[in-house]
Image 1 (spheres, rainbow, N blue to C red):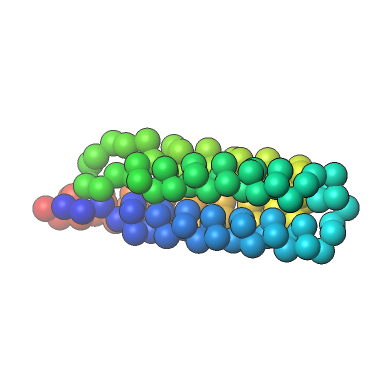
Image 2: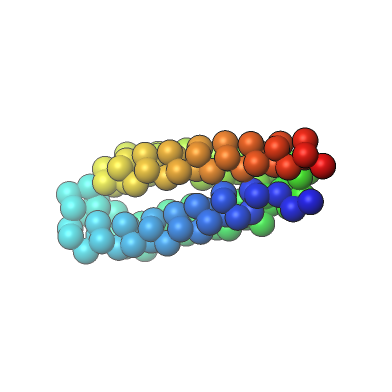
Length: 121
């Protein structure tokens, strides 16, 4: 049976990487005080690291019910890095809070749906 992790958690991570890039570009474009200390290249490199880890996490999410893969743990690492990016760009604290909540809900419901489907079969 197919797991719900790729659908629920994967969609959160893909949306997250798009929002992170737009947030970085917007913050830099608005010349926010904390963004003035870093160049656009440095900000984009930081966003790219988070994006690459998010993509790898999506690839490593469990595909079948009961399968153990490191995608969920790597997804939590992405959330922690996003939260840490708030120390560079303070607006990222808000973005991180939203995506941490979405990620936690997606992980919870994916696990719950997988458990219920496994119990039914």
